[in-house]
Length: 609
Image (cartoon, rainbow, N blue to C red; front, side, top):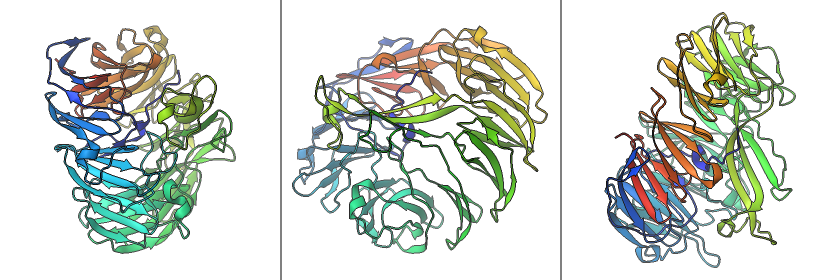
């Protein structure tokens, strides 16, 4: 599988009420819609013009009712018909004259959402301003919050010091002296607490009690300013900021190499809170008392160079180790042995953390990304895709707009640390195992897989479907009996890369197209026309899309999964768009409309005619 850049907000949510940030430059969009033009088999609803090329944000809200475009100094918003709602310069819109905005943060909502502007001043006080996307009016601004951005912030990084809490329509802003909660619409400080230091790494909100459970981490921007930082897991009254309990957790919250998102998770099961980081730590939900603790490595994040400036590339791997599975009475985890090539599964009692059983050691395994509890079996996937995040020191057309902390080289062109995110397969011994849930003993295993293995699909707790590059298999989960073995290479769509559960069928996504097989007997329903270079698929609403990003292009195909036919395709050579879908493309939450940003134009495209 070719290494393709998976534009970085594959790791950022893009649904309503979720924030997204991106660098670039976009100016005013002009005019209404020209209807009726065909884009492949898709129908263009309208096409409108930018007054200049999109260079910062160019995207829509979840419903496609607001189309936002910004550059360093201005913004324009179109309505669902492609007509301008408003446009203007930040310096004129904002009363604190926020102008050159190094970082822009868009929070989506049905009513338009918020455009959060950061204006970092080299000499003086940093400024922030929040605009109403629906009206173009300034909602509020402030110079009270400083050092919100690290020096080496990149266009796809998380904003570590600002967290939007969708459930409360509020911003949590971290400062050296504590945490502030602000009303998103007015900027009014609802409360501040000096008892919680650092940024919000993860939170869970309970609407019934209006309480938040939060875990902190030390933000890069403020790291040098913290002297008494400590790990904190807190339960807090969202109305007034009262700390209901405060617990200390073990370990250090790491951040992903490129996105800088904290690698930590929180789960509530019954009356217990589970923190997933450097193992599992279990806390009493009512008082924060730690009940039990199991230490292990949650993931593989090995870097080729420990220091950013060393060498030409830095690499980390994520999602190579399966997330824990929680049931009413147990938790199942994947443990790394003495090295990253040996692993095993453990089952622990949910109440006490006591080890119930450990599986046999599974050798030769770089990745074990999925485990499933199904009936009286635990299915284990050995091998599969891993997420790779890299920083490469190379020539970049965008090097001039990289953050100040990036390195620039002389010679033939500007060089910078350029971010990449993609999925790849690591050479290892691939297979699937079925473990007895009571004992952890291996009931059966299959290692009929070549240099890759797809994810598993579990059907009605009875059957498992899985493929490798050239074949597609079905097994009885209980006994390991092989129901069928289909020669997938006969479909002539290239090696399998992923599987899609589609009702009575399994669709195998491959390097050159799709092949569909019946779950009942493995009979092939169809093999699609050749679509080369597919690196990702999306299931959005009732629609399915494939993506191809070869040769600096971004092509989105709409696919009818029932018969494999291509509904249409959109190719964008422009910038902007949602990072989730790649350069120049955004898609509404129901999957019914695609927005393509192409230089000076934005096009609204209907998926289903």
